[in-house]
Image (cartoon, rainbow, N blue to C red; front, side, top):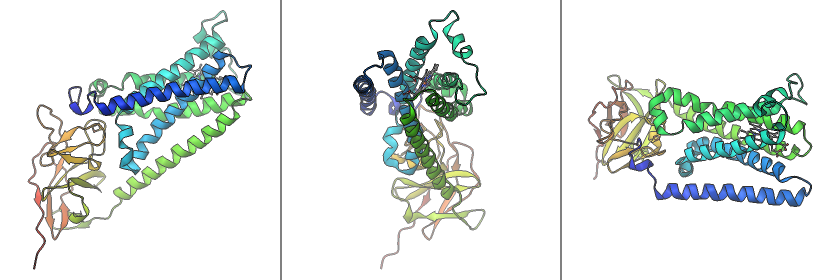
Length: 349
Ligand code: HEM
Ligand code: FES
């Protein structure tokens, strides 16, 4: 939590993540250029490197875009999300090498500055077959830069969560620009048709995963709840909530995580203060709700992070009757203590 939080410090899992990432990047570049020299003996090293870095950046971007929905669909993918920041920064660096090599290769020998040449050497914006696709790559690169530069939690706190989130949602604009960059580029080169097909498959995969994740969330949001007494509504069966885990329900457009632990039930906002992670998909560890994304912690009975941290999330009044959980949909101010509801013992003969 924040820079000092142990949970997002430099731990073994992160070292493994980064080692796998670096090994993957180096292997891809070596295999791509090695195979390129064999398959296209006439291709220059510069061309192969431009293509190797470009395709790798695009592959990494696909992985980044798939991780979010995959984690929503199956929690076993959560370890991939844990260090997505380094994946994002790596994607930018790889894309930057591709962009810089391309500019040097195609624009450095003229009598105008290479960056100016990028925009004026081809101005056929009204032609699909000859569209200046490199400019699209440039703008995508700017977005990847903005995301990489602001990816640290320092910026999340200083820019505020909504602004930070908006900047990072631009990844979809970058993706759209890159799809156009590659497809329009392929129209101008006979070697890239296979890549355009692969990109089409990637686009389908990204879209399908997002639709499936959205459908799952839609089901949560439209779960029927029954009105009960004193403004409380009946939301779920307590036996359906695994010990130290939560059921996520949606009331009046608000996602709420109903946690069951040590014979008690507490309800808090499902939204983590860090990067809106789904708290209801986390667990109670050492008495604290632990966010599945980067490990921020909150006490279930008051929504407060343990000292010295000061993050707070909204809490909800809750009670248990006949093993059904009843909830007051009106959220209490973040950090408000609420007496947990006791689960009645089942009657024995
Ligand atoms: C200043 C920014 C950029 C410039 C000037 C640029 C330029 C180029 C050029 C000239 C090509 C054609 C290469 C060839 O046919 O040999 C190309 C292809 C490509 N670019 Fe970019 N690009 C930029 C940004 C990006 C970014 C940010 C990405 C991905 C994250 C990207 C991914 C690709 C891919 C996948 C290809 C197809 C590679 C292939 O032909 O096999 N580009 N780019
Ligand atoms: S800890 Fe990062 S979103 Fe919750």
